[in-house]
Image (cartoon, rainbow, N blue to C red; front, side, top):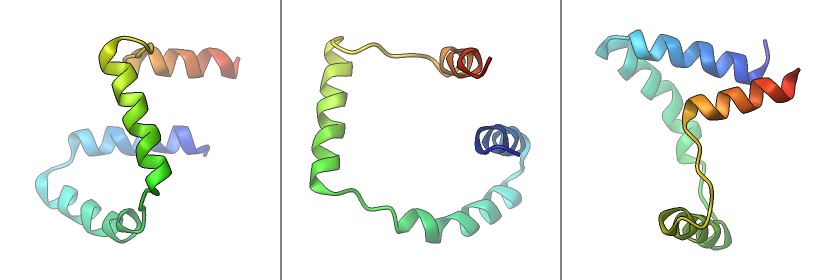
Length: 75
């Protein structure tokens, strides 16, 4: 199964999960997420993109639009 498909399937499970399952998922994921630290350069880039987004200088897409674009490129 490809990464995108796996993420979509897991997201579907999460949407239906009760609190006990969500806590278990959080516990499993925390160690790897805590390792993700952004560099100052990455933080600056994100700040720049946020500023462009909020000012309307960059185009934003909904989740649905993003999925349609990805699916269209796969064909």
